Amino acid sequence: METCYYVVISIDGDYANLKRTDIEVDDVKLVARALLPDGIEEGSRLRYECLEYELA
Image 1: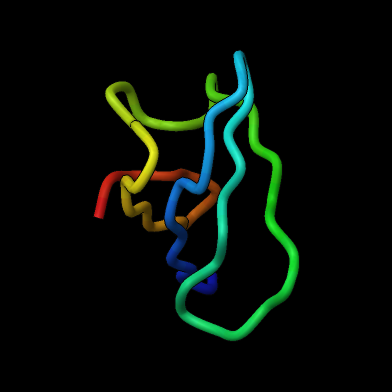
Image 2: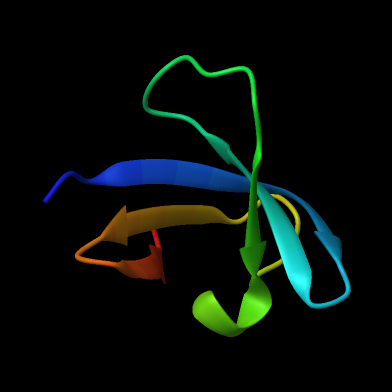
């Protein structure tokens, strides 16, 4: 599986907007906060691997 890196751009209720940082992309990814680790905030860096997000 591919490993991807993201930064939390914003949090809006039960969702967070993530921007990929390991490659150049123009769009943001909307992800349910239930899928993200506890304690994230704007600016948190995440690693996505094996269908799981974790703080990087």
